[in-house]
Amino acid sequence: MASDAGAGNRLERRKMQTRAALVRAAQSFIAAGKLNAPVLEITQAADVGMGSFYNHFESKEQLFEAAVNDILDALGALLDKLAVDGEDPALTFARSFRIVGRLFRQRPETSRVLLNSGLTLMFADRGLGPRALRDITVAAEAGRFTVTDPELALSVAAGALMGLGQLLQNQRERDGAEAADSATRGVLVMLGVSQAEAEDICRLPLPDLDELMGSESAA
Image (cartoon, rainbow, N blue to C red; front, top):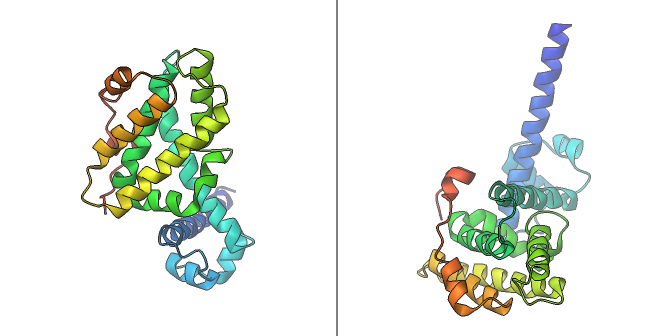
């Protein structure tokens, strides 16, 4: 019985490793903008067989969705690590915006997946969008943001975030942290925070992202 259980565990681990390899390969294709790549090319990059692909996914579209969801879930988990009960929601929103803005430089492949997947990600039911909408809504209810339509505010903030990401992709010489903080200040003012307070908020220290996410060299 123990032998059977061990064999079952090894099989399950191999399945998980195969799925993870496919997801990583799909993320690299999305980051490169190769959304029309055939399944065979993806399986070759993942070093798995075609049969293994269909053991996990019914189609390339399903794999790409899983690849994007994997990143959204990781970003959501990162932001949840930093959540503080009873914290000023304006601070929570600003910290999240500043951190994600920095990821465009510090986690370039992740950021390229986000940029190549489009603004629809901000309105997905997982990851960044739901958390940003929650923080904007709570801040509005608390009188911290002068917002009457949180979903519209999220749309504008999402456009600013994706625009920041594309700018940092195009202008490699630009200081990513400074640009992220400048964009955050602009969004905070748009949401109703005074310029002076927005500047104070964006001077607050941030946690070390390498410690939170693990090391990955910027490209």
